[in-house]
Length: 141
Length: 141
Length: 79
Length: 79
Image 1 (cartoon, rainbow over the protein chains, first blue to last red):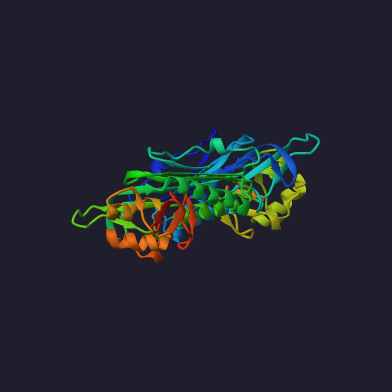
Image 2 (cartoon, rainbow over the protein chains, first blue to last red; image 1 turned 135 degrees about the vertical axis):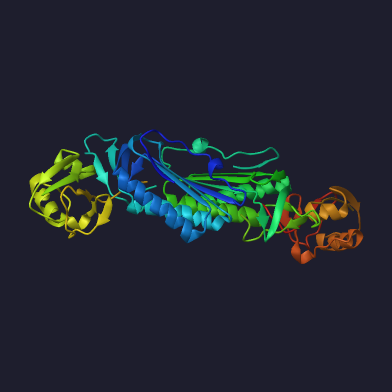
């Protein structure tokens, strides 16, 4: 399941994703970092086109299930104003074997960054620098 | 840090590993699966050569830090009698960028399975099949 | 024809609104964006955008119908 | 010479003990394992094992000293 949350999110427990045939759980947390491309970052603002984001997010999770033979996949993405260290996205993948879980988890975060209509604006420590809508960059997270 | 625990372990929160420059956290949970190589598995017994395991485990984490430029890495491995669904190993890796965290986390679990003196014995659902010390197999977890 | 347009991120800031109903004669997203780009001084080129019609990704040359919902999608940056 | 030996996993089960102090004339792990293999009917061959001396991986042909601690390591299976 793919969810968008306006409220602060926490690392989820894998409990709700577990099944007796599950041998591996891989999770990814994307957190707000205090710098990007050499700039000191103060906070981030995330904005979403919710209807399409949920649809595209769900599609990514279904693709991951088919492509990597995993058991379960879950993703929650936060929007709004986030501070350094805050959790922006959490992904959990369960599978029989670990290799598929690693691959699927990385596939999901890459796809979310490429295809889900979510935007982020960087606010800088140096207030003389104007806040900027950043594009999905290879080196983020 | 690499730890061996005789007590039951839980998914750790990444909180204690976080630093302001951390953008990505990847975790791995190895759990006891209800089957292996076509056999229905009832439980597992883990045994450790503790002094050497801690030394080798620590070495793996240090190697991962140098090799992948991650920020932090932590691994805890449980020993004793484990039931289906129980957490056998938990690994957490933090880094600036996600790619390194994924690579390092997979490297750590692969290395732990190859090099740390821990053994496991499978007990089968079919009690007429004798319990067996299994070797590290590519397809476990 | 009436078309419902929603704006996000940099387009929302430059349009100074989140949505509006346009009464226009243009019938495809390409012509509508070119019209809006002049009107609001949008900084993004069509080549940088994707477009969604009624919450589905579509082509810029699709024919729109009365009261379709239209969203121009700036480069995304989730995660 | 006295050597402290610890047994783990399948070797512990086959030796029916976790550790013991051997009083022997053999001075390297290879000769000691061959001796123990006959004594306890160990199923594993030397080629399947690693050896640790005083908690460090070592070669099977290293010269042991009085009261060294010796562990033969069956194929591992952590995780």
